[in-house]
Length: 322
Ligand code: 5GP
Ligand code: MN
Image (tube, rainbow, N blue to C red; front, side, top):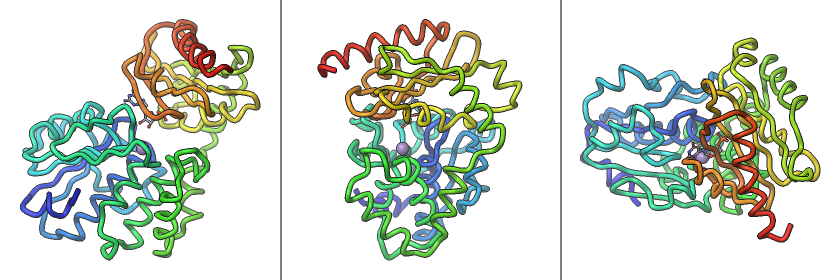
Protein backbone atom coordinates (compact mmCIF):
# COMPACT_ATOMS: atom_id res chain seq x y z
CA UNK A 1 0.00 0.00 0.00
CA UNK A 2 1.34 3.45 -0.95
CA UNK A 3 -0.12 6.10 1.35
CA UNK A 4 1.52 9.00 -0.49
CA UNK A 5 -0.21 7.90 -3.72
CA UNK A 6 -3.52 7.45 -1.90
CA UNK A 7 -3.34 10.99 -0.45
CA UNK A 8 -1.84 12.72 -3.50
CA UNK A 9 -5.06 14.38 -4.71
CA UNK A 10 -6.74 14.82 -1.32
CA UNK A 11 -7.22 18.27 0.21
CA UNK A 12 -8.48 17.14 3.61
CA UNK A 13 -7.09 14.05 5.36
CA UNK A 14 -8.50 12.67 8.62
CA UNK A 15 -7.02 10.11 11.01
CA UNK A 16 -8.83 8.31 13.84
CA UNK A 17 -7.90 5.63 16.37
CA UNK A 18 -9.85 3.50 18.82
CA UNK A 19 -11.87 4.69 21.78
CA UNK A 20 -9.93 4.56 25.09
CA UNK A 21 -6.73 5.39 23.16
CA UNK A 22 -3.56 3.70 24.42
CA UNK A 23 0.12 4.41 23.68
CA UNK A 24 0.09 2.59 20.35
CA UNK A 25 -3.08 4.31 19.24
CA UNK A 26 -1.76 7.80 20.09
CA UNK A 27 1.75 7.04 18.72
CA UNK A 28 0.55 5.57 15.42
CA UNK A 29 -2.05 8.31 14.76
CA UNK A 30 0.34 11.16 15.61
CA UNK A 31 3.28 9.51 13.80
CA UNK A 32 1.17 9.15 10.66
CA UNK A 33 -0.15 12.72 10.87
CA UNK A 34 3.33 14.22 11.41
CA UNK A 35 4.53 12.27 8.38
CA UNK A 36 1.64 13.32 6.14
CA UNK A 37 2.02 16.97 7.19
CA UNK A 38 5.69 16.79 6.29
CA UNK A 39 5.11 15.19 2.89
CA UNK A 40 2.10 17.43 2.11
CA UNK A 41 2.56 20.75 3.97
CA UNK A 42 -0.26 22.30 1.90
CA UNK A 43 -2.92 19.76 2.93
CA UNK A 44 -5.16 19.80 5.99
CA UNK A 45 -4.41 16.79 8.22
CA UNK A 46 -6.49 16.27 11.39
CA UNK A 47 -6.37 13.62 14.12
CA UNK A 48 -9.59 12.63 15.98
CA UNK A 49 -9.41 10.73 19.27
CA UNK A 50 -11.27 10.28 22.52
CA UNK A 51 -9.34 12.30 25.12
CA UNK A 52 -6.00 10.52 25.59
CA UNK A 53 -4.06 10.49 28.87
CA UNK A 54 -1.87 13.59 29.42
CA UNK A 55 1.04 11.16 29.80
CA UNK A 56 1.31 11.34 26.00
CA UNK A 57 1.51 15.13 25.83
CA UNK A 58 5.26 14.98 25.09
CA UNK A 59 4.51 13.68 21.58
CA UNK A 60 4.49 16.40 18.92
CA UNK A 61 0.98 17.17 17.66
CA UNK A 62 -0.69 16.04 20.90
CA UNK A 63 -2.24 19.43 21.55
CA UNK A 64 -3.73 19.55 18.03
CA UNK A 65 -5.73 16.32 18.47
CA UNK A 66 -9.44 16.99 17.95
CA UNK A 67 -11.16 15.42 20.95
CA UNK A 68 -14.29 13.43 20.04
CA UNK A 69 -17.51 15.23 20.82
CA UNK A 70 -19.60 18.00 19.33
CA UNK A 71 -16.86 19.49 17.15
CA UNK A 72 -16.55 16.14 15.37
CA UNK A 73 -20.26 15.95 14.63
CA UNK A 74 -20.02 19.27 12.75
CA UNK A 75 -16.86 18.36 10.81
CA UNK A 76 -17.24 18.43 6.98
CA UNK A 77 -16.36 15.33 4.93
CA UNK A 78 -12.78 14.22 4.27
CA UNK A 79 -11.20 13.13 1.00
CA UNK A 80 -9.21 10.40 2.76
CA UNK A 81 -9.83 9.04 6.25
CA UNK A 82 -7.52 6.61 8.06
CA UNK A 83 -8.66 4.24 10.82
CA UNK A 84 -5.47 3.30 12.67
CA UNK A 85 -5.10 0.56 15.34
CA UNK A 86 -8.76 -0.50 14.95
CA UNK A 87 -11.58 -1.14 12.50
CA UNK A 88 -14.12 1.62 11.79
CA UNK A 89 -16.54 0.31 14.47
CA UNK A 90 -14.19 1.38 17.28
CA UNK A 91 -13.63 4.95 16.06
CA UNK A 92 -16.36 6.32 18.33
CA UNK A 93 -17.82 9.59 16.97
CA UNK A 94 -15.23 9.59 14.17
CA UNK A 95 -16.88 6.53 12.59
CA UNK A 96 -19.19 8.86 10.65
CA UNK A 97 -16.21 10.78 9.24
CA UNK A 98 -14.67 7.48 8.11
CA UNK A 99 -17.91 6.25 6.52
CA UNK A 100 -18.46 9.54 4.64
CA UNK A 101 -14.91 9.97 3.35
CA UNK A 102 -14.24 9.46 -0.37
CA UNK A 103 -11.38 7.03 0.31
CA UNK A 104 -11.01 5.00 3.51
CA UNK A 105 -7.78 3.42 4.69
CA UNK A 106 -7.52 0.90 7.53
CA UNK A 107 -4.14 0.22 9.17
CA UNK A 108 -4.44 -2.34 11.97
CA UNK A 109 -2.82 -5.31 13.71
CA UNK A 110 -5.85 -6.71 15.58
CA UNK A 111 -6.63 -10.30 14.66
CA UNK A 112 -10.30 -9.51 15.35
CA UNK A 113 -10.17 -7.06 12.40
CA UNK A 114 -8.34 -9.39 10.01
CA UNK A 115 -10.49 -8.40 7.00
CA UNK A 116 -10.10 -4.65 7.44
CA UNK A 117 -12.88 -2.08 7.11
CA UNK A 118 -11.43 0.35 4.54
CA UNK A 119 -11.42 0.59 0.76
CA UNK A 120 -7.64 0.17 1.22
CA UNK A 121 -6.48 -2.13 4.01
CA UNK A 122 -3.08 -2.75 5.54
CA UNK A 123 -3.74 -5.36 8.22
CA UNK A 124 -1.11 -7.60 9.76
CA UNK A 125 -2.07 -9.48 12.95
CA UNK A 126 1.56 -10.60 13.26
CA UNK A 127 2.78 -7.01 13.66
CA UNK A 128 3.58 -5.89 17.20
CA UNK A 129 1.68 -2.64 16.89
CA UNK A 130 -0.07 -0.24 14.55
CA UNK A 131 2.99 1.99 14.98
CA UNK A 132 5.19 -0.75 13.47
CA UNK A 133 2.82 -0.85 10.46
CA UNK A 134 2.93 2.94 10.06
CA UNK A 135 6.73 2.68 10.19
CA UNK A 136 6.60 0.12 7.34
CA UNK A 137 4.37 2.38 5.26
CA UNK A 138 6.32 5.62 5.48
CA UNK A 139 9.30 6.55 3.39
CA UNK A 140 12.48 6.36 5.45
CA UNK A 141 14.03 9.53 4.11
CA UNK A 142 11.11 11.54 5.52
CA UNK A 143 11.58 10.24 9.09
CA UNK A 144 12.71 12.68 11.77
CA UNK A 145 13.06 12.71 15.57
CA UNK A 146 9.41 13.74 16.19
CA UNK A 147 7.89 11.05 13.96
CA UNK A 148 10.39 8.51 15.34
CA UNK A 149 9.47 9.32 18.96
CA UNK A 150 5.74 8.89 18.26
CA UNK A 151 6.22 5.51 16.54
CA UNK A 152 8.80 4.27 19.05
CA UNK A 153 6.40 5.05 21.89
CA UNK A 154 3.62 3.09 20.18
CA UNK A 155 5.82 0.06 19.55
CA UNK A 156 7.23 0.09 23.09
CA UNK A 157 3.75 0.29 24.65
CA UNK A 158 2.15 -2.53 22.66
CA UNK A 159 5.14 -4.84 23.22
CA UNK A 160 5.30 -4.11 26.98
CA UNK A 161 8.71 -2.54 26.23
CA UNK A 162 9.81 -5.38 23.91
CA UNK A 163 8.83 -8.22 26.27
CA UNK A 164 5.65 -9.69 24.77
CA UNK A 165 5.61 -12.47 22.19
CA UNK A 166 4.38 -10.04 19.51
CA UNK A 167 7.94 -8.61 19.47
CA UNK A 168 9.73 -9.86 16.32
CA UNK A 169 13.13 -9.25 14.74
CA UNK A 170 11.32 -6.80 12.45
CA UNK A 171 10.01 -4.94 15.51
CA UNK A 172 13.51 -4.60 16.94
CA UNK A 173 14.90 -3.48 13.56
CA UNK A 174 12.23 -0.78 13.37
CA UNK A 175 13.00 0.31 16.95
CA UNK A 176 16.75 0.35 16.23
CA UNK A 177 16.23 2.62 13.23
CA UNK A 178 13.86 4.88 15.18
CA UNK A 179 16.22 5.49 18.12
CA UNK A 180 18.94 6.49 15.65
CA UNK A 181 17.08 9.82 15.30
CA UNK A 182 18.37 10.81 18.68
CA UNK A 183 15.33 11.55 20.86
CA UNK A 184 15.43 10.67 24.56
CA UNK A 185 14.02 7.15 24.21
CA UNK A 186 14.61 5.93 27.79
CA UNK A 187 13.00 9.12 29.15
CA UNK A 188 10.04 8.77 26.80
CA UNK A 189 9.26 5.23 28.01
CA UNK A 190 9.86 6.14 31.65
CA UNK A 191 7.44 9.05 31.35
CA UNK A 192 4.71 7.42 29.25
CA UNK A 193 4.86 3.76 30.31
CA UNK A 194 6.34 3.22 33.75
CA UNK A 195 5.63 6.44 35.60
CA UNK A 196 2.37 6.43 37.61
CA UNK A 197 0.73 9.15 39.64
CA UNK A 198 0.39 8.46 43.35
CA UNK A 199 -3.34 7.67 43.06
CA UNK A 200 -2.72 5.39 40.07
CA UNK A 201 -0.33 3.40 42.27
CA UNK A 202 -2.74 3.45 45.18
CA UNK A 203 -5.62 2.11 43.12
CA UNK A 204 -3.38 -0.55 41.59
CA UNK A 205 -2.53 -1.55 45.16
CA UNK A 206 -6.23 -1.89 45.94
CA UNK A 207 -6.79 -4.07 42.87
CA UNK A 208 -3.86 -6.34 43.76
CA UNK A 209 -4.91 -6.58 47.41
CA UNK A 210 -8.46 -7.57 46.51
CA UNK A 211 -7.54 -9.95 43.66
CA UNK A 212 -8.53 -13.60 43.73
CA UNK A 213 -7.01 -16.74 42.25
CA UNK A 214 -9.51 -19.01 40.50
CA UNK A 215 -9.30 -22.10 38.27
CA UNK A 216 -6.81 -23.77 40.64
CA UNK A 217 -4.45 -20.81 40.52
CA UNK A 218 -4.30 -20.66 36.74
CA UNK A 219 -6.29 -17.44 36.57
CA UNK A 220 -6.16 -14.26 38.64
CA UNK A 221 -9.06 -11.81 38.69
CA UNK A 222 -9.74 -8.41 40.17
CA UNK A 223 -11.97 -5.39 39.68
CA UNK A 224 -12.52 -1.79 40.70
CA UNK A 225 -16.05 -0.47 41.18
CA UNK A 226 -17.38 3.01 40.43
CA UNK A 227 -17.42 4.06 44.07
CA UNK A 228 -13.69 3.36 44.42
CA UNK A 229 -12.95 5.16 41.15
CA UNK A 230 -14.88 8.19 42.35
CA UNK A 231 -13.11 8.09 45.72
CA UNK A 232 -9.68 8.21 44.03
CA UNK A 233 -10.99 10.54 41.27
CA UNK A 234 -9.66 8.30 38.51
CA UNK A 235 -10.89 7.31 35.03
CA UNK A 236 -10.39 4.08 33.09
CA UNK A 237 -7.13 5.44 31.63
CA UNK A 238 -5.66 5.54 35.15
CA UNK A 239 -6.16 1.79 35.49
CA UNK A 240 -3.90 0.81 32.61
CA UNK A 241 -1.15 -1.54 33.66
CA UNK A 242 -3.14 -3.26 36.44
CA UNK A 243 -3.96 -6.30 34.32
CA UNK A 244 -0.30 -6.72 33.28
CA UNK A 245 0.78 -6.52 36.91
CA UNK A 246 -1.78 -9.21 37.83
CA UNK A 247 -0.49 -11.43 35.04
CA UNK A 248 3.03 -11.38 36.48
CA UNK A 249 1.80 -13.63 39.31
CA UNK A 250 3.72 -16.92 39.34
CA UNK A 251 1.74 -19.89 37.99
CA UNK A 252 -0.95 -17.78 36.37
CA UNK A 253 -1.96 -18.40 32.75
CA UNK A 254 -4.72 -15.77 32.50
CA UNK A 255 -5.39 -12.44 34.17
CA UNK A 256 -8.73 -10.65 34.15
CA UNK A 257 -9.15 -7.07 35.30
CA UNK A 258 -12.35 -5.09 34.98
CA UNK A 259 -13.69 -1.74 36.02
CA UNK A 260 -17.29 -0.66 36.30
CA UNK A 261 -18.35 1.78 33.58
CA UNK A 262 -21.96 1.97 34.80
CA UNK A 263 -24.15 -0.04 37.12
CA UNK A 264 -23.74 -3.74 36.27
CA UNK A 265 -21.53 -3.04 33.25
CA UNK A 266 -17.77 -3.63 33.14
CA UNK A 267 -14.91 -2.86 30.77
CA UNK A 268 -12.94 -6.11 30.82
CA UNK A 269 -9.22 -6.60 30.08
CA UNK A 270 -7.86 -10.09 29.42
CA UNK A 271 -4.24 -11.23 29.29
CA UNK A 272 -2.71 -14.68 28.86
CA UNK A 273 0.77 -16.18 28.95
CA UNK A 274 0.90 -18.91 26.33
CA UNK A 275 -2.10 -21.23 26.14
CA UNK A 276 -5.32 -19.24 26.09
CA UNK A 277 -6.31 -17.21 23.03
CA UNK A 278 -8.03 -14.34 24.82
CA UNK A 279 -9.06 -12.62 21.55
CA UNK A 280 -11.33 -15.65 20.93
CA UNK A 281 -12.82 -15.30 24.41
CA UNK A 282 -13.35 -11.52 24.04
CA UNK A 283 -14.97 -12.00 20.62
CA UNK A 284 -17.62 -14.26 22.19
CA UNK A 285 -18.73 -11.18 24.15
CA UNK A 286 -18.57 -8.65 21.31
CA UNK A 287 -14.99 -7.52 21.97
CA UNK A 288 -11.68 -8.38 20.36
CA UNK A 289 -7.94 -7.80 20.44
CA UNK A 290 -4.93 -10.08 20.20
CA UNK A 291 -4.16 -13.66 21.26
CA UNK A 292 -2.41 -12.55 24.45
CA UNK A 293 -4.21 -9.24 25.13
CA UNK A 294 -7.86 -8.53 24.46
CA UNK A 295 -10.88 -6.77 25.87
CA UNK A 296 -14.66 -6.47 25.82
CA UNK A 297 -17.56 -4.86 27.65
CA UNK A 298 -19.76 -7.19 29.72
CA UNK A 299 -22.98 -6.91 31.70
CA UNK A 300 -23.82 -8.38 35.11
CA UNK A 301 -22.15 -8.51 38.50
CA UNK A 302 -18.41 -9.09 38.88
CA UNK A 303 -19.18 -12.76 39.68
CA UNK A 304 -21.44 -13.16 36.62
CA UNK A 305 -18.71 -11.79 34.39
CA UNK A 306 -16.04 -14.06 35.91
CA UNK A 307 -18.31 -17.12 35.62
CA UNK A 308 -19.04 -16.34 31.97
CA UNK A 309 -15.38 -15.80 31.09
CA UNK A 310 -13.84 -18.64 33.09
CA UNK A 311 -15.89 -21.33 31.31
CA UNK A 312 -14.22 -20.39 28.03
CA UNK A 313 -10.74 -19.97 29.45
CA UNK A 314 -10.99 -23.37 31.18
CA UNK A 315 -12.26 -24.98 28.00
CA UNK A 316 -9.22 -23.71 26.11
CA UNK A 317 -6.84 -24.85 28.85
CA UNK A 318 -8.39 -28.33 28.78
CA UNK A 319 -8.08 -28.47 24.98
CA UNK A 320 -4.43 -27.52 25.36
CA UNK A 321 -4.05 -30.39 27.85
CA UNK A 322 -3.12 -28.04 30.68
P1 5GP B 1 -6.97 -3.40 26.96
O1 5GP B 1 -7.25 -4.58 27.83
O2 5GP B 1 -5.58 -2.87 27.19
O3 5GP B 1 -8.03 -2.35 27.00
O4 5GP B 1 -7.00 -3.95 25.47
C1 5GP B 1 -6.21 -5.02 25.04
C2 5GP B 1 -6.31 -5.14 23.52
O5 5GP B 1 -7.64 -5.51 23.16
C3 5GP B 1 -6.03 -3.82 22.79
O6 5GP B 1 -5.35 -4.12 21.60
C4 5GP B 1 -7.39 -3.26 22.52
O7 5GP B 1 -7.40 -2.47 21.37
C5 5GP B 1 -8.26 -4.52 22.36
N1 5GP B 1 -9.61 -4.30 22.90
C6 5GP B 1 -9.95 -3.92 24.15
N2 5GP B 1 -11.28 -3.81 24.28
C7 5GP B 1 -11.83 -4.12 23.08
C8 5GP B 1 -13.16 -4.18 22.59
O8 5GP B 1 -14.15 -3.93 23.29
N3 5GP B 1 -13.30 -4.53 21.27
C9 5GP B 1 -12.25 -4.82 20.47
N4 5GP B 1 -12.48 -5.16 19.18
N5 5GP B 1 -10.98 -4.79 20.90
C10 5GP B 1 -10.75 -4.43 22.19
MN1 MN C 1 -2.22 -1.48 19.03
